[in-house]
Length: 262
Ligand SMILES: Nc1ncnc2c1ncn2[C@@H]1O[C@H](COP(=O)(O)OP(=O)(O)OP(=O)(O)O)[C@@H](O)[C@H]1O
Image (cartoon, rainbow, N blue to C red; front, side, top):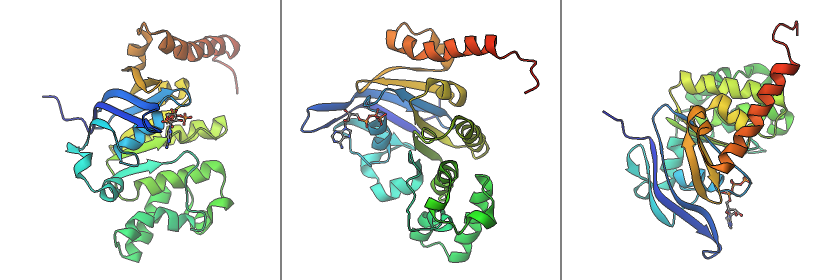
């Protein structure tokens, strides 16, 4: 028996500027429980708008969005956002709060006792692989970009959400850090049984991390499927997006022999 999707968009549209900008255009998309979905597309294609419609940071004009089976219009937006972890592009940390203060903000808002918050912060620091002692009391500007993103992930997980939304979380990092964080997050996704929707510009990252990929262009959902399914799409833009990772893989296969010492 098919299970109910954890997030379901049904014919959703959103315009800005009195209807002049059609940011999301008649999108229907299901995200299954436990799935890791990447949303890929160029700048301005509607990715962030689509993501933020799910936790009502943006309200849809038409169509229906359900989260855990409930129409989001019937759920208090604040409570909805506490149920859904959100990771911002550049960490989105509160600059005046320490690492512990940032990670513990949601438990604090929900009235969790301080000693429980403290234990949860330690647990989350372990989970995102940041050493407790040196980092707990630092301010965000005293961290590297990668460390800030680890804190951002820990904060998103603090209220034990089943769903995590990530807006280009690793985009601003150097390739090694990006790779390590991506792999670590993928592990967390699996270990915690999360359902993740992640925006990325980078088709290679999407192929490596996600179970399924949704391709956006001009507000429309052009294609969706596993990397294998996408590779048989006859859409020219999807083909163009897949060409770069394909070409890179071929060239790397030639330029980087497998049996090197490095
Ligand atoms: N608050 C807003 N007011 C007016 N227009 C908006 C607003 N938010 C988004 N838009 C417009 O909606 C369209 C989709 O924007 P969106 O941010 O969803 O794209 P995106 O794919 O996430 O882009 P990027 O990859 O650059 O972040 C763009 O044309 C953008 O200018």
